[in-house]
View (cartoon, rainbow, N blue to C red):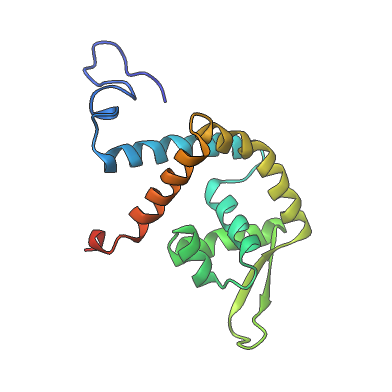
Length: 159
């Protein structure tokens, strides 16, 4: 993230409410936005968007996943996921196959070309992941992971 222009009155990341005095929800969004930008830049040279990367990654991790499953896993709307899957199909990076028991359900999985692309993506994104973890001990990382999962699962947060 860039530093705001001097005299703008907006604090730089790490200062004021954009730093340790900030609200957790805002800081979480600020961090997610910064990571999204870094990922977009890392993947852009490969001709892939972050949502496409997420769909490919989750299709590989959960080979029996349907479009609806992938939408939930990637936190995309079903409509957005359909467009992304269509583009991935056209590019030859994924394929559809009918579910063994429920033929109308279409499952998505990476093709060999999609698998190769994912490996190239990992080469570009692994340093970003390592950078996120670099200033934490293993115990601290475990605590951060537990907190992030708990924040996503907290039933008191649902409205």
